[in-house]
Amino acid sequence: MADPMRIRAVLVGEKVEAKVLIRHDMETGKRKDSTGALVPPHFIQTLTAKYEDRVVLDTVMGIAVSKDPFISFKFKDGVKGGKLTVTWVDNTGDTRTDTAVIT
Amino acid sequence: MKCISKYIFALLVLHISTYTLAQSSSTDEIAKYRELLADGNPAEFWEVRGEELWKKKITPNNVSLEQCDLGKGSGVVKGAYVELPRYFSDVDKVMDLEQRLIQCRTMIQGLTYEQATAVPHGSAGKPSDIEALVAYITAESKGMKMAVSIKHPKEKDAYELGKKFFYYRAGSHDFACATCHSKDDQRIRLQQLSNLVNKTDAQKTYTTWPAYRVSQGEVRTMQHRIIDCTRQQRFPEPRYASDIVTSLIMFMAKNAEGGVYSAPALKR
Image 1 (cartoon, rainbow over the protein chains, first blue to last red):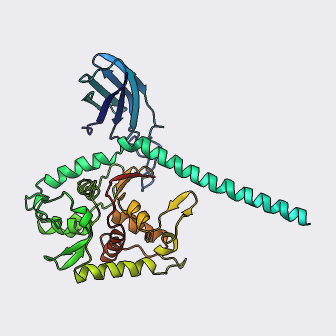
Image 2 (image 1 turned 180 degrees about the vertical axis):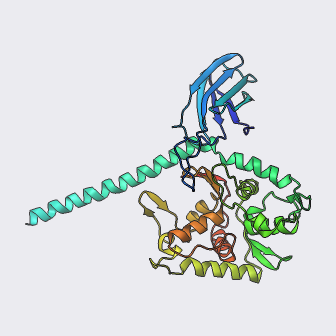
Image 3 (image 1 turned 45 degrees about the vertical axis):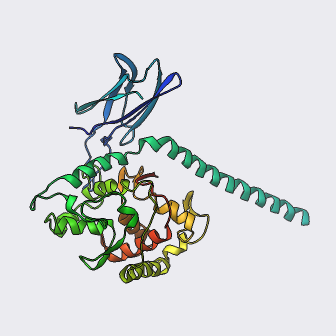
């Protein structure tokens, strides 16, 4: 079971500024461990952010994204108290969904 | 001839000025990068896990660390770190946070010394309980002022030993900590080196450790930082949680007195 994300969503002017911090090893599959064996790939492939039912961010991610990714984005037409839901799925099928209320 | 030397001199001046310009702009860029990531410090994950570990009852004694006295009474975490290292009368010794944690985990929780010091430095897929606990405990001192005491004779001794170690030149390169860390505006490549005997600089440095290191993807503790420094100095590496490291931490913590604590931070 993956660790929960840290999501912050703040309304600034007309836009909501969202910041998402994810705990994930993002192994490329190309790194070797101390015994010289390849560490199997383990990385997030898709990440989707929804404001209520509307998709505001749809991402395809690969092995070039760092460990413990931090993603920041802005979107319009959000209101205070509205809900932002973020979901990621990795290459092993593991997934995690968390929700934050816009402040 | 005179004309040529003038020309060379002018070139030299030009070279030096672009050089310092490049240096200061890269420092600014690093500052900007830190600012961008300020809300996204992955150390938070370590803090959360550390809090769980602090409150979790574990075998064999089936007690949590909430009975551990970090110097401000049993289970008091808030503000404990800005007063560490300190003298603990129960063991008649000066300890830093990591030594005290080992003490609590062995004496209170009943772990063996080997269990309590297993994985002091985590890696991918092999997380360190110590780094998580340290992240949680230090975060509970955020915004407080460094206030380490050297009143007790043993605390004073630790401070003096740390100071001696700081200026002690040895190793294949005849290095001391002070070789790099006792002058203003020193650097290695583009990495600025802090002057640890200058109060402002010492405060800025000390209050931002431990830190999540982007290059390593882990939270690293003060013990780790010092052990890594000795490695870079070509000293024999001290054992994890040894007294000499605590003494050096004592010296640095005292030099940083009054600085506002703001770790776990984010570093290169």
